[in-house]
Amino acid sequence: APVQRRSKRVDEQSRLNEDKKRRIARYAAELVDDYDSIILDASTTVYHMADYLRDRQGLTVFTNGIEAAFRLGSNPSTKVILTGGLLRLETASLGSPLGTGSLAGIHANKAFVSCTGWSLDLDLMDDDLFEVQIKRDMCEHADSIIAIVDSTKFGRQGLASFAKVRQLTRVITDDGVSESQLLPLRKAGVPIIVCKDHSTQVLEAASDDETM
Image (cartoon, rainbow, N blue to C red; front, side, top):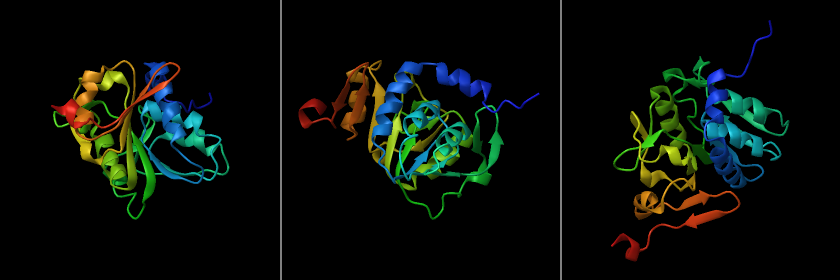
């Protein structure tokens, strides 16, 4: 029987809140220019984002996501570099301490990462310790860190943090989260893009009046 490449779990996860994730993914892809060097995690939002990057020219992509790598690798002008480590079929990703340090000497224009929740200090968190290790590494090797986080991740925490709020360039989310929930991030100086069905809303870092 032929080997099925796609992870059943990733396939199922990608269908959860698919419309929200696609809106976020589409906007995130618009931030990527031809000939950019980018870092992508193995999240299902990145899985969708890869679809919107297929026509970019001359990209250099570093990722631990197997599915995104296959999708982006279909463009012959795109160079895809996998971060290394243990192949984890259930998440279609590469992880473990073996992959840590694989980005040494690399400096990308942008990193796109998701999370499973936020700490009380607004750090990005994940429940998967393998992902925490590689995402910490990713966030140390990019000029800009863009968090692509659907609304279901707000009001939740994760197991361990991998990026401080002060490291974030911006957060992209959907309109399932209230402005009051987003205000703490804006107070911390992070602009937020809210992706709606047919439009986007830009919430700049909070002004002094709003923080009082």
